[in-house]
Length: 211
Ligand code: NAI
Image 1: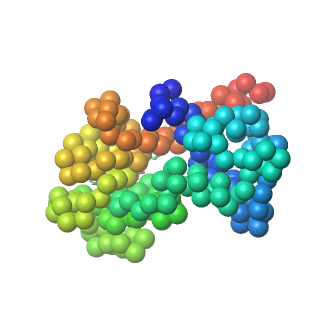
Image 2: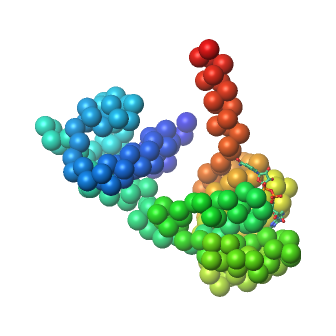
Image 3: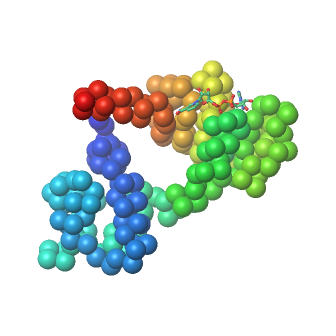
């Protein structure tokens, strides 16, 4: 796996899980946790956690463990979820609707400001408090509102057509549910692919190798 700013992708991929765990502990009113306890809860070794956090300067104190509130905040800052980035969602079909309705964008540093679909029959319907807009208005909307992230819930052919336009309009990152491989055509654009079927196949592997 590669690196971003000298930090390996596998470490970066573990950060959301730390953030989620620490958030849950914070909710429970727990103030601090030993590295041993944190590692046991997370199913990682204490040295793995230390190594991961050392990539960013390290946060534990010998004999004290971790202060949950401050570690949560620091990891939030590293992930950038303390910022607010404007995002648009394209494709308000079954998947797009589910993503729009169930994803807590704001808690993750994103502000969903527009939803687009090329199906005129959907135009004007309200989704998550936003009107579904026709893609004809995408150019003007992006010029006026400068979204930096696009969530793609459209078929791969549509995504392949639309991505160059969105990049030209200033989109810097894609949360990509389509099966179009954005990264191979746009290596300098931030892309996070989500393939639920990959997760299902991983489950299949685990079952195949367990029983
Ligand atoms: P759907 O057919 O319910 O919705 C697709 C929506 O995209 C429609 O409303 C359609 O009008 C719109 N659309 C198509 N081309 C467009 C364009 N150029 N601009 C704007 N809107 C456009 O399909 P569903 O179930 O929502 O799935 C959408 C895509 O996501 C599918 O291609 C599917 O392969 C993919 N998918 C990916 C998953 C994943 O885990 N990554 C899981 C499920 C679906």
